[in-house]
Length: 342
Image (cartoon, rainbow, N blue to C red; front, side, top):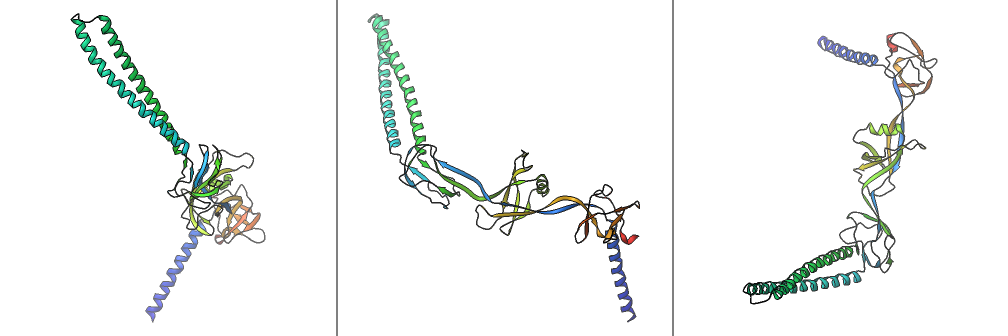
């Protein structure tokens, strides 16, 4: 029994020592802190990117493969009647084929004239034909070479024109990036469209963003989170980060425009989802630990480490701190004497 009693006394003493040591350490670390207030920053989601769909060619719509709300897949969005452009391409190809035949004909004539010139030139050296005859054949050969060079260049110009037509032909099929959603459609099959007319709008909701206008203090609080922070979207916890910051400062609103990127949202992605994040913003006043406050309820005051007494003007109160009006003698980090040591 005596041994058990002694053991119990030792345990109690050890616990009391730990409690007193912890209290002493906490009381030794009493100091003035900057007052903060909790601010709830709210915004709404939107798509990370949206595109206004228009046509680069005039024509008649013969196919629209998606409706509003549909997700773009591998089919084209809008198809425009390509009849006339196809006919132009066919005609141009026929012209190029005729040009190829003409080039082959001229090359065949060049082969003949080269052989003929060699034969006549050999006879000329033997004085069997006149110089005039030799020069005439030489002139025909030079002209044929010029004709083939001109025709080859003409063919190249035709091929460039054909490539331009084929490139324009691609414009008769309007494709949008896969995964985008049709958010607005102003076109139906049979409509006649003009260049530049707005036909539809598509948006990328695979990634959600939140545009905000924030004060200097709010921006600083967001930047202090570092590379990312936790927030809420429609009551569900998400990860968020600053995606973009407009460095320009709005003199009228005194705010910065930013865009936050939302990650890991498991709900249906759409615009208008409510986003919220809690920020700690520096507030007017200072935070005084209650353990350092003398006469907390009547005339609250604190004692500095040098023995000076500073009266407090109470603003509000939290669980462990009094929020008091700023006093130049109570800067952030000023050490205070605990009440228990007096």
